[in-house]
Amino acid sequence: MAVLVVGGAGYIGSQASRVLRKHGYEVLIYDNFSTGHRRLAQGFEVVEADLSNTAQLTAALQRVDAVMHFAAHAYVGESVENPRKYFRNNVEAGLNLLNACLDSGVKRFIFSSTCAVYGVPERVPISESNGRNPVNPYGVSKMFFERALEAYDRAYGFRYASLRYFNAAGADDSGEIGELHDPETHLIPSALLAVAGQRGELEIFGTDYPTPDGTCIRDYIHVNDLAEAHVRALAHLSSGGNSLAVNLGTGHGYSVKEILTAVEKATGKAVPAKVVPRRAGDPPELIADSKQAETILQWRATRGLENIVQTAWEWMKRTTPSLAGS
Ligand code: UDP
Image (cartoon, rainbow, N blue to C red; front, side, top):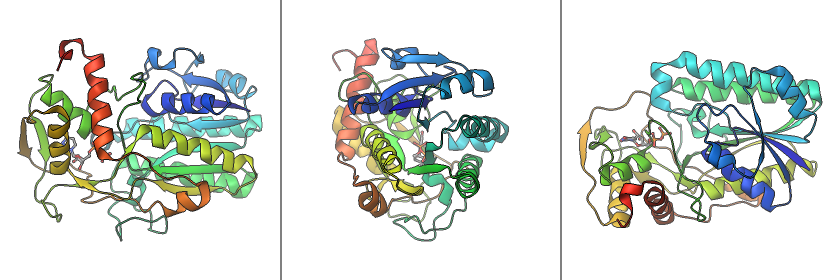
C-alpha cells in the first residue's frame, strides 16, 4: 500500500514516514519546504509543491491509497497574533487537499489534530467525549478540519482518523529527527536552548494558573509513539474500521516548572529562566485520557518524560556543533 505523507519533511511527518516504511508501506512525501527540512526527507521520493497546487496534488494522489496530513502551522501564540496565516494554511490549503483526495478517489485520511480542539476542557483527564470548544485560532482551524472530515464521511464515504495529539516532543533514537523549528517556541527545546546558551532566559508564561505550582500543565508525548499511532490508525481504516477521533497522550501531566526540573536533570545544568505574564490562548491543564486509542488501535505511549527530554537533549547536542562535548 502507498501513502502520501503531506508535510513529510517536518518533525512528526518525517518520523511517520520512517515508521510507515519500516512497516512495509510505500511512502511518497509531499512538502513545500516552507518549514520542512530537506535532510529529514532524504532517502524518500519527494514531490516539492504547495497544497494550493491542485495539478501536482492530483498527480501525486493517483499513485497512493491513503493520505497522512501533517502540513499545518502549529503555534498557539502565533495563531492568536496572526490568525489569517492559520486559516489560510490549516483550513484553506487543507480543504484543497481534501477535495483533491475526493476527486481522486483516495478516501483514507489520517489527520494531525490536536488537544487544542478542546479549549479549556470540562474535565481532566480529557476523554474524546469532552466538547470541542477551542480557545485559540490554531484549535479553531483544527476543529474546522475535523468537522469537514466528518461531513465528508457522511456525504462521500470518506474514512478518516483525527488523531488529537497532546504535546509532541522528544527526538528519534537514531539521532536523525528532532524538533527544528525556526524560531523555536515550544517549551522543551526552548528550555534546552536556554541551557545551552543559544538564546536568552527561558520565559515562564505565567505562574498564576489554578494548578499546584501555578504553571500550566501539559501531557508530553514522544514523537516516536505518535508516529506509531498513525500506522495503527491506517491499519484500522484499511481493515474496514470506522472513522474515528482519538486522543494521543500519555495520561501524565507535567507543569512548566516540572519540565524545567526534568531539563536540569537531563543536562546537569540550571535553566536560566524568568517569569513573565501569561501567553494568550493557553488553557491551564491538558492531560489525555487515551483509553480509546488503547482499545481501538491497541496503541499506548511507551516513553515517558525522562526519555523525551534525554533524547531531545542528545539530538540538540548532535545538531549544534558548539555543544559538542556538553
Ligand atoms: N511555555 C512557557 N515558555 C515557553 C514556551 C512555552 O512557559 O517559552 C509554556 C506554555 O505557556 C504552555 C507550555 O509551556 O503552557 C507548553 O507550551 P508549548 O508552546 O510547548 O506547546 P503548546 O501547549 O502551546 O502546544
